Image (cartoon, rainbow, N blue to C red; front, top):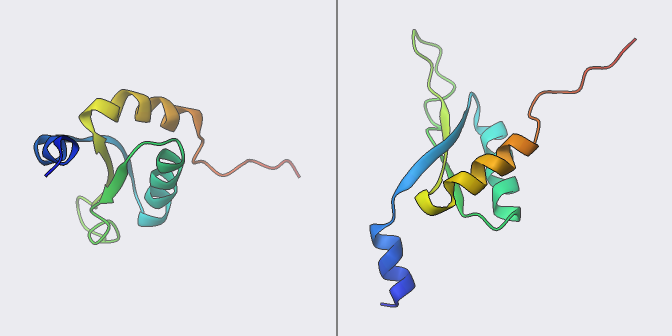
Length: 85
């Protein structure tokens, strides 16, 4: 086992963002990965449930990458553009 693999075993994942659906969470994960940040989305199975407290899809990165990931997320807009008629 390499030193890098040992570090992964003890690394902490932190939530850097949440989205209401799996598709938009996947887009954020892709953007982060394009920026060289390892990221995953969790909670996709429960995000679509309609209940008192609907589930959210959490985007997680390694703790050491969290600040940079939040900066990248702040730079992207997930809202659809508004068009004037």
